[in-house]
Length: 244
Image (cartoon, rainbow, N blue to C red):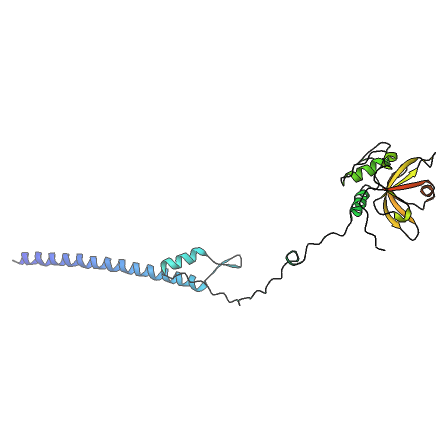
């Protein structure tokens, strides 16, 4: 009987120990889980209080941290309030192209012809050349006027029969063709140029032409050489509106 009683006590003790051990491990596992959650929460709260990560001395917001905080702590995405005053934009003034009328150039066709002719100043002279690298006098006038849709023949004598006659100095206008005699025969046309400006007070004009000595240059009608050889002028362009 004593032996049987001892066996019962031993069995009860073993079961009690096993049960106690089971409770111990369960409690230990619970403590580990709680401890882990506490440490995780502390770490997350630390990141939350900092708000930003430091990288090279510059504050950088970590998107990964924001995601982690939302997932673990359960924070909803709350947009930060910007401490900026709402700026009321002033009404923009319409651009000049919207208000101002399209400006019409006051430059006449003659001005355009002269401006284009001047782009060839300094181009060398060569007899029979028609540009754009080399010119003779009639080749130059023909090339310039062709750019604006006027077809002239490449010979100064033939050009003297084209267009309309200009009676005298007082009738000259910018863009007219002016003709001069040859060296050996001043009454036979041997040279042509384009009027650049007219001085009505002095009764003179300046003109651009391809000269044998200087290539494309501008000269004055008051120079003795051209004054002695002037023959007449022809008008290719429309008449200018003269203000009396």
